Amino acid sequence: MNWLDRLLGRKPPSAQVAKDRLKFILSYDRAQINPELLERIKNTIVNAISEHVEIDRAGIKITTERGADGDHLVADIPLRGGASPEQVEAAVRAVTEPALPVARTAPPVSAGSRRDYPARKRKRR
Amino acid sequence: MTQVITITSGKGGVGKTTTTANLGVALALRGKRVACVDSDIGLRNLDVVLGLENRIVYDIVDVVEGRARLKQALIKDKRLPDLMLLPAAQTRDKSAVNPTQMSRLIEELKKEADYILIDSPAGIEQGFRNALAPANLILLVTTPEVSAVRDADRIIGMVEAAEKKPPRLILNRIRPALVRRGEMMDTADVLEILSIELIGQVPEDESIITSTNRGQPVAFDGNTPAGVEYGRIAERLLGKDVPFRVLNDGAGWMERVRGLFRRDQRGAS
Image (cartoon, rainbow over all chains, first blue to last red; front, side, top):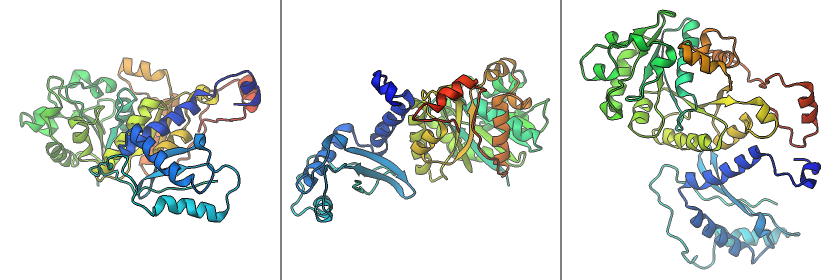
């Protein structure tokens, strides 16, 4: 969509909308996580990280991706402003190695399906 | 060694039966003995698409239940003697056959053919499981639409769960003009979402309608847009390296110039 389209208030082409919607739909179809649970997972991660780095909450995307070894839960968290390597490391550790037991906000994901995945959290600048 | 290929989709109406019929014709035209099997018991259509509906005497359920031998039920196409059809029953339903019976029947059919193409029904129930059980190779047909791709994704999961190799994708009913305008997902989009290997991309083609009306699959002619692509898929199944090309529906120069000014240049591929 070019600048003129945006100026005239035209919507993005529907193929892109379809693609985005599919990615969202499949992220919970595949992992058999309902949207509510996905939202809670997102909030847990965001709360843990935002103590160490400033993040753009609106831009956070959590999706599932299919890899050669199975499905992955991927969190894409835009950082706002600069963040030192130490801050980023602290943020990652807050999620992957919590100091205190994480309060259970949701029931565990059912382990019955072949699509069990290791949760992998990636931070991208 | 006979190859057993199951054509499935999840979503109904995306072109499984049309694909099965046309790939059957394309392979038979290239000298292979092909047996097409309609596993959509209760809602058979492969016979109609192939134009063999008048020739049905016995069907797959008759064979499974012992009322007929396999060779009695197999219909040889008079246009192409290397092409055979094992029709489904119309008066029963998917519970009439189970995956074990299906596998046993296909095992016997291997003596008669180099390629067995199984037309799977839509859905994920018994009919689909029957079609999946004997497969060496699974072709997943989908159109570039949200519902179809969503269902296709579920099928991939079920194929994995059945411990078969990942299916290969046939993207069907592509409309290059819509893709150019950004109003239809292109092959790259669908591949990115489904993450399986592509084996064919078939354009929307009016001659499919007329061909079904006549019971004469387009692959016989091989000159229509879809017919050409079915031929290329057959070549790939035979192991030839046929490159994937950019689909073009002969858009005029104005369209192409306009396309240059779009930031998000989307070419059909």
